[in-house]
Image (cartoon, rainbow, N blue to C red; front, side, top):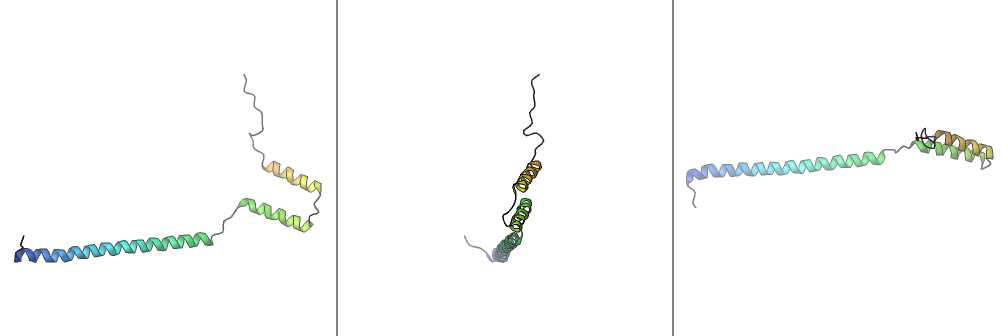
Length: 103
């Protein structure tokens, strides 16, 4: 199949345009991947620097400080008070209560 001069005048510029469009598409894809990679790195770094907090850890550290200040000489009364306080904090309104549904 041979192309005539008039057909070549139209086909050659369109080939260049198609090549430019393909190159732009390829470059956009690379840029998107780079931006996604940078965002992932920033997110990972932010998560690594973030401090994970836990509410229960405060109470444990306070107990450790009290134990260290007493040098292990806590009395049984103090231990009983701590246990009672923990039980009161952990009391659930429904668990452990007996309901009679016979009727």
